[in-house]
Length: 138
Image (cartoon, rainbow, N blue to C red; front, side, top):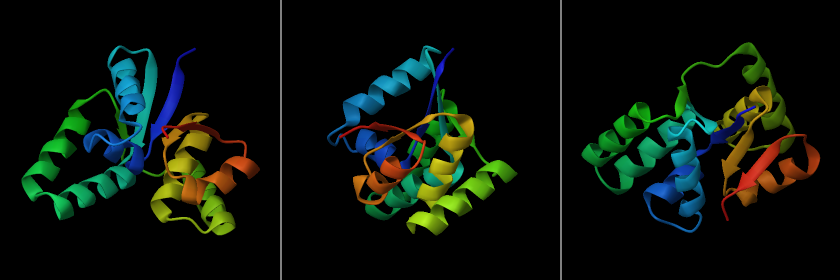
């Protein structure tokens, strides 16, 4: 069985900005290219990346990175199933996290995937209290 991961915005940004943990993200991206793992990202989380790059760099660079992700082996999920909708709502209610984080976690939970993240600030409490797998990049 192939392992599954959900990429959140902070993990992808660490890779794009060559920050600590980028090597782990790079490895997962390469494994997805080689069909060793399934790598998912919700489009709402990709929007966070697009916004960050557009704000801090330029619209051209944001467009380039956005297109690279769309052309990669990462499966961009652009809808919210009822199961992800309800799970994200449950998690957001319990843990008062951002909507994007709730959607990424909801997607990971429904897929039985590990969330690939560095967001200890919002997610440590979730890891301690939920049956969701985490892969920390730092």
